[in-house]
Amino acid sequence: MKSQKKNDNNDNKIRELNEALEFAQQVDQKIQEFNVSSAQVANKWQNKVENQVKTSNN
Image 1 (cartoon, rainbow, N blue to C red):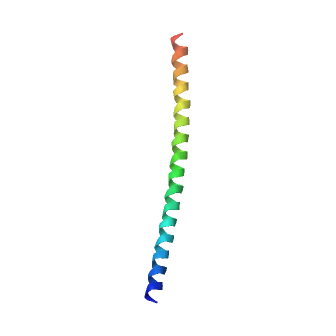
Image 2: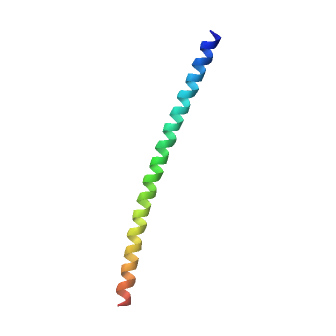
């Protein structure tokens, strides 16, 4: 009985850790998506500025 309770407790801990890992992976995925989006916006604005500088120098 005591051994079974310990096993159940360990199973619950493993399940909770797996859930925490899944959540952390989802957060990581969202952060990566945000970083990609931010980089795309930054590139867009950088290109606009570079084009404006080129046209103003001509």
